[in-house]
Image (cartoon, rainbow, N blue to C red; front, side):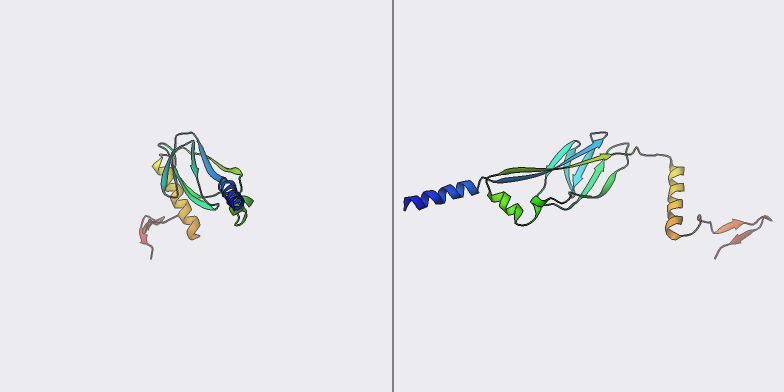
Length: 149
């Protein structure tokens, strides 16, 4: 009877020693940007955060003097993250570490308001499929004004 108990205890110890660690490392150029991952602040770059599943994460990065970066970032596909394989890695006496690295270059903020308005008008015209925006009243070549309907 003690042999079965010993074998059972050894099996439990061996099966409970597995460990899967998944980490996202985020770096920026320049460093020191504040990072939010899935709406939780995780620190300033370079920064690492652990994650539990592969997929797409919401990322927001802000730094004074630079344009903020907001978007979805994929972790990519790993065979180790598929059902069955991940369970086996959790229970086997194997320690694994998956590292996903994201490096982002920050763009300096453009404080020229006139250029910003020009870019906004050009984008609006592109989206609407029309030419540049016109005002309600435009001056005619003969000096009179007309109203656009």
